[in-house]
Image (cartoon, helix red, strand yellow):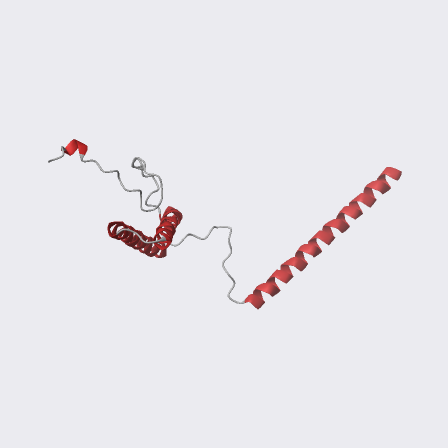
Length: 149
């Protein structure tokens, strides 16, 4: 006895990454600065952050217990695809490192020289504050003297 094709439906298997099945995401419109090297690194880091939890979920599912051979194969393929994606994202991230912010100073090559320069600047700052305080005191005394007259 043949079953009509309409009635030959099987429930779809749950997603391999443990997420909820949903409609495919709408296509993302590219931003005007999509090719800007400064924007590539943060976007790659976000992509890596999305792939890692999926990999961790698959590994947890594999270690949870035995799976049917077909399910094991699907899980292994998904893990392989995600691992390859992660490898490619890391390679791209190496090509486009995150830019150093303009307000960040580079790491000093000679730490002792850095410490001496920092101590000199601190001493100069304190001396300038003391000079300012002395000048303010002198102005305050002059104004007080003027008021007395």
